[in-house]
View 1: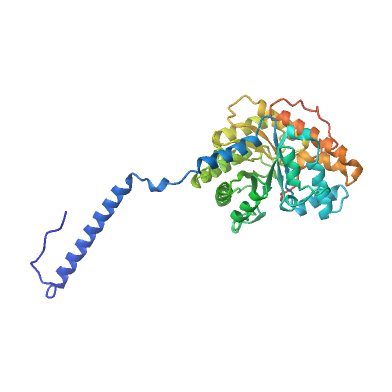
View 2: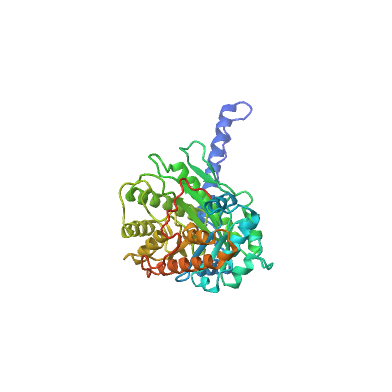
Length: 409
């Protein structure tokens, strides 16, 4: 209501009273403005306002995500960096040249059509995306011919997190939107971004958990804006002496933070995939756990933290041997508990160890190496349905330990 006129003083002769009048009038006016503004905006709920992706974009993203986690299918992670593939080649006596990298990826992607019964998508490294087979066919086309969806690794590696205890974050956000737009135009329909968390006495710290969760959320949002399905990968490394219970609690804490961040960034969950570690004890833990123990801890952690809206979960192998990765995935799918998402694989080393050993860089061994890939893909396809029989698939490196300390791609 308007203030009454006050005319019992003169502003020139009684400046103190005038100042008090102006001040009180200003305060009351400001309060009225604020109250009216609050009333007019109360129905808008501005603190939670955002736009969902368009119905067309939602449909495109969910279709891609659901195709990747179709029953009995999973992902071949062939996105090793130049330095990482060099280490793999060194183990088999192959020189790390661009053409040898091309020949090896050609071996993988030109495998018999039957491989597509269990491989729905392949994660590529930037270099690989633009390489071609001997006959000039781009690798992306080789995959499309088999109805395999091309994907791309988009992070630029881990960097130290200042002020932490040897923890890290992941870089690559600055130009991600432009790169995603180009990758989509070049035939990639999903992407992967890896963050790394370490279990030690004082880690992972709140700083590290929060930072990596927000980085993953920002990445996922940028991908979806460019019609690319984001695979969210918060990997809790298996290094250390921690037991299964500590690994489970850390995994739950990390995943809870990740999904809070994804919610904060309005990420469309039905158009995302999660690539987590299985819950396993540290590599140096003296207690040995069964596949059923790992399955129980893993499914429990996921149920406590991952919304049912998520399109699917594609586990990383985390240094397990080929056989361990298949057996544990099978146990997870056999576990008698709530599992509202498809639970499948996104394996690199656990799909390629036998392939590399069989190939050895020799052209005459290509077919034998491709057969190894098909066998292991089939084993994991069965495991994704809870139908794998332990030991039923024998590979040239099936039981070889694949753990790498402080693993960095």
